[in-house]
Amino acid sequence: MNTKFRLLLVQVLVIILAAGLFTPQTGTGASSGPIPNRVLAHALDLELGRVHRRTNEPLLSSGVVYALLQASGELDRRASTVRGTTPPTPRAKTQGCQNNFTGHGDINTRVNQDCSFRRQAEEVIAVNPTNPNNLIAGQNDSRIGFNHCGYDFSFDGGKTWGDLIPPFYQFQLLDGHTADACSDPTATFDSLGNAYIGGILFDVAANDSAFVVEKSNAPIGGAFYHTPDSSVSFQTYATLPLGVVANDNYPNIFRDKEFIVADANPASPKHDNVYATWTRFNFDTGAGIGVNSPIYFSQSTDGGATWSAGIEISGANTTFCTAFSGESNPNACDQDQGSHPIVGPDGTIYVGFGNGNTPVSGVNQHMIVSCPPTADCSQQASWTTPVKTADDYSTQPVASITDPVTGCPAFRQCLPPNGYRMDDFVEGSISVDNHGILYAVWADFRNGNTNTPNCTGDYSTATSPCDNDVFYAFSTDHGATWSAPVDITPASRFGFTAQWQPWSAVQPNGNMLFVAYYDRSYGDCESTGCNDITLAVIRHPASGAPAFTYKRLTTASMPNLVVANNPYEAGFLGDYMWVTVDPSGKPYVVWADTRGQDGAVEEDIYLSRP
Image 1: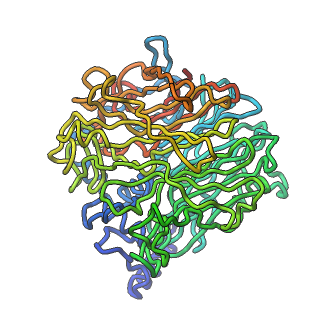
Image 2: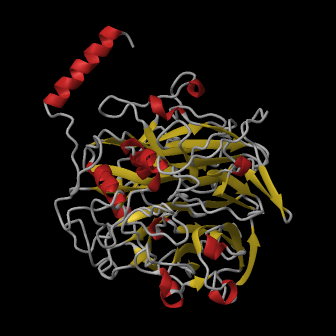
Image 3: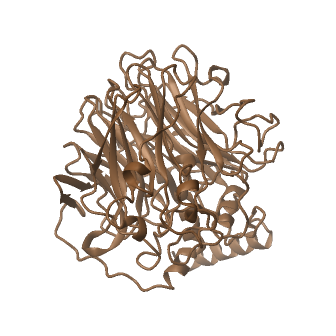
């Protein structure tokens, strides 16, 4: 930058500041740094303990919040209070930092290939239905600063991987500048083997945010991504235009926790449509309690190039949604987070989500809506009334201030001695088999309230053991009614230990439901905070007599990540992990693992193919 241009830039900034055009708009507390978007400002205020969380208030996703923490200088401040870690020794590897952990007959394969101490967490994985050896994965990724979206690809069933940061960042937001952050990566394949990825683009110092999609035509298989617009000359060479699901330049709106899914069944009447759901945080509704976060939907019928206008699909229910409405309808189910869209064998779209419109503190609920294959799902009237899948007892310990030892953030729930934030709202997943039977999986603290009362209340005084459990329920009538919850991790088998952050997938024939989760039942992990990944295999899950088997996927326990060994990553291990199955019913599991190379404690993505 030459001197004349630098002086001109300074003069322009002085004029802007003098005119008051860059004054941050915040929520009820003062924010650090210029954050004009009120949703982001409020999220940072909550994270730094400046304001209090409302009862059952849904929270912004952690990937977004960590970009705010880094921009505010908070992570640097925390790091300045502890001693650093010795970097790993560089190794001669031509494909990045490959790694396998082996033990008790299993292999854990490192997915991301970044060799730094930057976070990779909050992962997804998808299998190409035309080539099961072709996998794509995604994760929140901070290798180029703040929080971005990283993606990975494999052509040998997950034995080896390449990875990349996609060219999202040429996209101009509505105010004309490019984004400096991305969160909540999502990935899917259609029936032809075309791959799609998406993410929330935003700027920590601007109002703008956008939900965008890129494509990787078959048979590229996710090795690189390009514009989804097939009318563009040299399509696979071009980054722009992106597929734009949603785009805003308004200080009261922020989109979060988005997922995409393609209808990959070639026999479906809507095969190869791509669907998107997300949480739309609105900080100024002008009705009810004045804020809400309903679930929105959009669809693409042209390979991700164009998208229908977003519509609210979380609806209203006079029986289940009876408090905290932010809309004129007092029974709106609009305090939501963590939507998960799936497609049934007949083309029905199902969307599960977490909801907080309940009058009882600490008792939230999981809900589901659907749109039949004969309807135009871009129309709000095509969606069913939301149905409660199950109650969610969200009474885990809550930090009143950010814990200086573990990093558990203010007003977040954590299970000591871990400081990893939890959010029951976004840990819920749904799946459907070829018979149309639906399965819902989640984790909550209903048994912990009685069995481990020491692990309740304020996080600063709570202690392990913490009896957090994983549950499932099923529906044989397309989601209209649900079975009673079934405890997958009962104390009779696992003792008073914590199992948390589950994800699930069902075999197409419905014979086996796979549920993977973080698990502290091995060795002394319940007291020290180490974790493993366990896969529960439930045979005949929709019968009256399901059979359970369990497999430890991690070859060794993952160490507890705390401020002393990694202040930049302490407090966050992702809001979810992922499980998928290939057409034959074989499961694939990805998770964020803290076993860094050369003894470091840091987060990378690992895969198991049990």
